Image 1: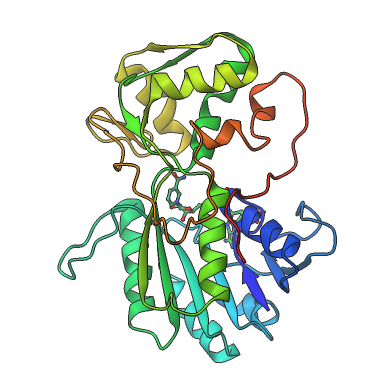
Image 2 (image 1 turned 135 degrees about the vertical axis):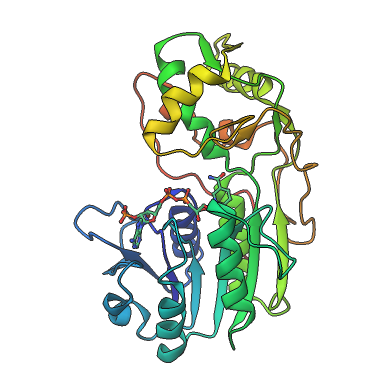
Length: 294
Ligand SMILES: NC(=O)c1ccc[n+]([C@@H]2O[C@H](COP(=O)([O-])OP(=O)(O)OC[C@H]3O[C@@H](n4cnc5c(N)ncnc54)[C@H](OP(=O)(O)O)[C@@H]3O)[C@@H](O)[C@H]2O)c1
């Protein structure tokens, strides 16, 4: 039995759907089963990663965990991993982030801080772990959805900042493969999409998929920072949201051996039923990954 955490989110939702479609036994950890929109037939078990005492039923009978960590710190991670080990979990595929520290003396802050801390806990554990250091998710472009539904211009800073966004379906597929096949324990995989696109190119690509001419107009970082920081984001100088002025992407690095069934596309989001959020009306079910888990 595979337990997926963050099961209603971008990457966990993909892991649940792909495991279910592949016929793998899968259970979703959710905080509110009544609200959870999961594929029919998927078992949902209530639990809260911030309160490890609530996780007993979720871990019962589980041998693999697709671990998404949605909390801003790793404070409860030791107790969560202890509960998993005590319940008999053997393997964990952990959705980490590009840039997590390898140097044991390095103590990054923020997002990379908690990912680094959880990676270290896993490395020190008896578990068979696989680390998925993902670059930016394609879902990050949904930040522009309101502007794209409202008009033909996206106002944001750093038109020329490049990212090699990866579709969350591909991160999920690599994680499921690591959980269900031998040879991935102790591996750290750096995952990105197939190519680097500037933000201006990303917006043009979304426009092309919608059959519209959408352009990126650069706005000053100070304006965007004002809009972003009160919403909970952390912005340092030269930084707005997850994008830096000097971003050049991560070199579109993919694990070809893992993404063996991938179909490179200009921007994966536009290929897999991802245009609905950018339209005024439309519906969209979670798209299937382009990467086989078998
Ligand atoms: N975005 C990127 O570019 C990127 C890149 C690399 C790595 N990552 C990492 O990916 C992770 C986020 O993944 P995502 O985008 O799929 O997340 P997401 O869409 O924001 O979903 C978060 C999920 O976590 C669940 N959740 C929230 N609090 C919880 C709690 N206390 N206990 C149990 N479940 C809880 C939510 O469920 P409910 O609200 O339904 O309970 C939801 O399913 C983070 O660790 C992030 O650092 C992101």
